[in-house]
Amino acid sequence: MGTPIAIAKKTANTQQDIVLHSQFANRHGLIAGATGTGKTITLKVLAESFSRIGVPVFLADAKGDVSSLAKAGESNAKFNERLKILNIESIPFSSSPVVFWDLFGVQGHPIRTTVSEIGPLLLAQMLNLNDTQEGVLSAVFRIADDQGLLLIDFKDLKAMISYVTEHAAEFKAEYGNLSPASLGAIQRNLLALADQGGDQFFGEPSLNILDFIQTDSQGRGNINLLAADKLMNTPKLYATFLLWMLSELFEQLPEVGDMDKPKLVFFFDEAHLLFDNASAALQEKIEQVVRLIRSKGVGIYFVTQNPLDLPESVLGQLGNRVQHALRAFTPKDQKAVKTAADTFRANPEFKVDQAITELGVGEALISCLDEQGTPQMVERGWVMPPYSSFTPISLEERKALMAQSIVTGIYEQPLDRESAFELLQQKVADRQQQAVQAEQDKEQEALAKQQIKEQEALAKQQIKEQEALAKQQAREKAKEDERAAKQREKLIQDTVGTFAKSAARSLGGSTGQKIVRGLLGSLFGNK
Image 1: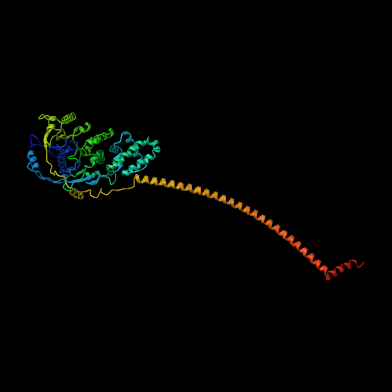
Image 2: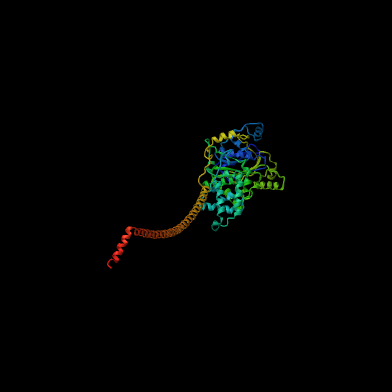
């Protein structure tokens, strides 16, 4: 059996509680009403109540005031006056176990996920892409998968899109036309998202969604509080981030069927942001998650100003409803009042559409599922007061609670392992190295050819020089031989002449004369 949770007291009879049965808390719910009508107090009361029965809670703190859940409340004149209206003697003031989270890691533990985990559908919603651009982004993810390029952080995604842009012609045959215009639009939207701080959402260590489903030492469910005041400046990022968490819960949690109480209750504040300009595919995914996640033991409670903010297909699945006052100043407001009134099971004691416009601050029209799971008749009631403070905690108190958190030290230090960015950089470096090597090879080949030409030219020159030298040497040798011949001839001539002269002189002397006479005598003496 479940636990009845008193969330309000009937306006007409403050002795009687209006309860929400915990076994049907996973049938989802709605908290609606104009600004200043008490939605935040209702949100706090429900969160505290779930925590006290051991149900973990996740909710976003859009204005910074829900952090007061972490501090025990205290009496004051206004609070005591409300207790009298509710016919309550006292409240056991207490704090709730709160774990602070912050997408930007400033006011809580950082929350990250990888680009691959969030996927192209949610990322396209985050980047506000049209259908064509969404198709191109899906192709980028497919190429990354096929090439083993893991998309983890923001720089991985940027590098992957640049890589696909450079090689679009190569991928066209297998993945279709990857328009440069679409790729350029995706890159521009990524830069805009980074300027808004969205790049901090992507990285490791990625969030283990099961860390949200924890209880403290007293068995109370932890209230996971997301600091969303800055995040609200980027509504697409806020809505997509919360939808991603719901999708992760849906994928990771097992089927449990009906339980005495939910595993987790998820409050989606500013719910209209989830459906504004959502594509048909995304809206279908939202409806599927809302419809099926209750079987995983998760209850979703949408918080918004106007019931018309939610599609009828979603609105029809919300079994537990708290409707605060609406103002019917315009035709659209009047339509919202009628829509809200029509979603309740009528109560013959009052007119629902009229009562919606008359509710005071902290008063609401409430209809929850009864013990058989059937919608109860709508009741008009005063929401119970919270046990926690109305004053937000200080930054010092927040830091002290963060230091004691069960996840302290797990997510603070980012990791940067090898992924698409590094691998693509390596590819670029390899291509550059190959280009440099090819250029060097080309230069070396050209140099070798030049050297061969120079060597051939040098050899030819040497041959010419050797031939010329040989010719010169031959000419010089011929000249030398000629000079030597002339010198020999002259020497002979000189020798003969000298001999003749010497002989002549000898003949002219006495000795010569004797010889001549002897010769003549021998020639003529016989005669």
